[in-house]
Image (cartoon, rainbow, N blue to C red; front, side, top):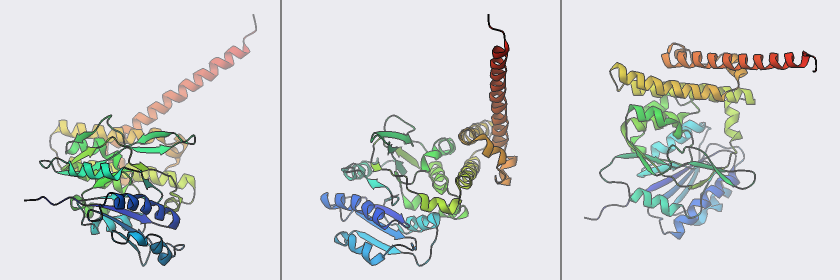
Length: 341
């Protein structure tokens, strides 16, 4: 009996960037056509009621690929999270991936992606696979920025500890492939306003299903997300704090999901440790002044043991740093006041 070939869908949510999303579509469609994969690969674009897009004009730009490319527009703006959630929920492919409308598929990478899907161990239940994020520097060179937890292709076993240890790799949309049938849409809906919604659903996937890390560079990443960032705050400070608070909440939500699966003090301590490390990492990345001024941290987090420990650790670290700075300044001042020999 011949086994059905697995299918793949590229989901391109778009807002305010008609030329950009057309380039994103063409980066995939040209490879689909070249490899004759029209029956296995689909590209779906959903424009989120963008005020500056002529839908007929953009559809015409990709009309030659209409066999496997579809473009439609929402009647009203849903926001990024809800728009993507609905796209994933409607996907009937074996795997789907979000390609943000300012990113591109690297040339000659679709063949490797399809081979990866085809070569998944049939004895395993893989809920997701992902690749590192590479970005182009100003000098044109490539640098791996994030989402590179291993130096080689690796299967991540499912479970509570894996969920917290690797959840941060889900925060980049482009580069994450998921089986839409395994997504916990109820959990996503509960946290639809969280800007780190991919971390929440990826952490949930890691609880239940294996994930594959593929050490390949499959995408061209461009950071042009200002149109999305506007909804997270009008100033850089507001956006930074919104992202910080949302990430901390995403960690807490994911930890609660993981802890609900386990019993016993040793397991709890292991999970608390991972939660603590996630908080500590974010605190170290945020300017001290913003942490001091931040009044919007979710109230439910203030009683979490790992969060309290992270605050204590951060405060002690800052005290130690400030004390060292003070001693250094006093030493310099003393040296400057001493008479020359």
